[in-house]
Length: 283
Image 1 (cartoon, helix red, strand yellow):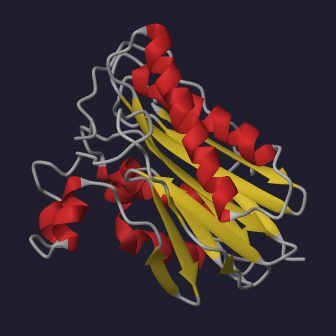
Image 2: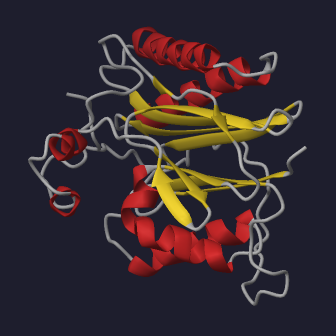
């Protein structure tokens, strides 16, 4: 059976509160990891992310393996309904969250994933990096249509606008993958836009080559993000999932190992002043 190693990191950045939430946990011979990035202001985003993570944890933690694509899709739709109930119960006029989830079966050697919004999943395999999710965003639609380039998207006035998220009034269609075979040495990174937009896709594989374990890899990327010292740095969060034994730098690597828990727990909102975020409300 393949060995699975998991680590997580969630930081507030320059925002008053942390509206990201995440969880990673075992289920028999498998692991599931889920990350959500809330939006709404006045802590509504944090509540949306918390609700989504809680519902996904119930759905995936109690699931009978093997995981199936339809089970993952149903879990996301249940989380969407839970966010909607939170809006109705509290009279909130806006509360949304992105979501990306990964399920890894170490006994049957497969993975599957799903997402809504612009939180991403990367797979690093045999020296290459693939973004296996496609953002539900205005700029991604423009890129796909050939109207702008990825470089132009970085400074586009609507770069933070989503076209889908959990909690919207419209019907939701999660993007769920088929079952994909695992390889020894596969690495997955789930991350919010505050992580991938600041770190950049070059930093992700470059730091992996030097990292002896997933905790050190996340810490190296975190340091790269903090080194940019952006005055408007968004919350930034990530979960790393390493598959098998043939991943990681030699044990005598000089990169220090940080004292972070290998298993992520659901993050609680930071108790701080309200932050009326303008972050990417669905159109």
